[in-house]
Length: 329
Image 1 (cartoon, rainbow, N blue to C red):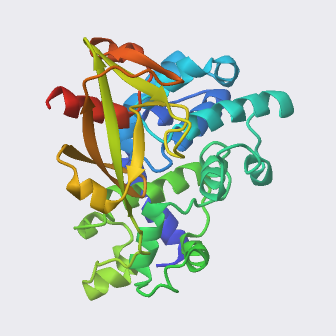
Image 2 (image 1 turned 45 degrees about the vertical axis):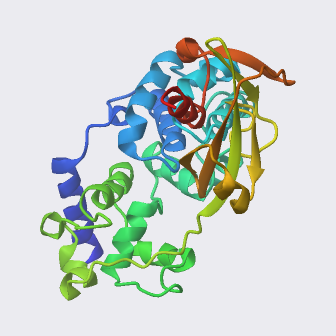
């Protein structure tokens, strides 16, 4: 298949199979730019199905850049609550302020300027250029990488390097519908070229795919090292209230409410007779010993939270998971 026929097949598939997503609605130019910005920041390290309800709630309460720039941090984080990676929300607000101050309220349409905005790197900038501004860019996300690995049958570490994958993406060529085309390629990766059990017979690219011809769909990926760390969380309870602190100790969940914690070694963790729970966060497997305390303790930067009043406070999922474990404990 040549580039022209590949483009035609991809767009034809997309027109008949694309998902209905809230950021793909018929929008004004200004709305499309804002919706693309918010959705792409949310989609960093988060799946589409997870993002959808958060996106809808966010847009309902913070509908444009001007309001975002003026939104207080409490409301902002409450809208983001549960989505994780809270630095994304803070960067989004910083970006809104910068756009209003330096770009007259308009999302910049040059990739070099987009990359100057907080929280926007190579992938997000190319996605915005393609989707919001209809420019000839193919964002290199995990879905697109997977397609390329299979089409070219890339197996060793050198072949799957970012530099090589970047070169290989020119296989897709150009389209007279760049916005739809970029989304179509990512959509094929998400819905058809799945990590396991790809739906090859529905794929518009199977005639060009070496993995399909060889009937070998296994993927080589870079080793992602998950660090295992051990902690002890102190649970101070007074009547129906629990003591929480504002985290300024650990790099994760900085400035958010957590239980008083300290890192311990594996030997201490294994010797603990307390209840233990596991929580995964980014590239870290956290093993936590729950240490229930009967006596009251007052710590700086802390307050007591009623367990029946959790919804009124901005709590990361991490803290909520510990809450659930101690209520059952």
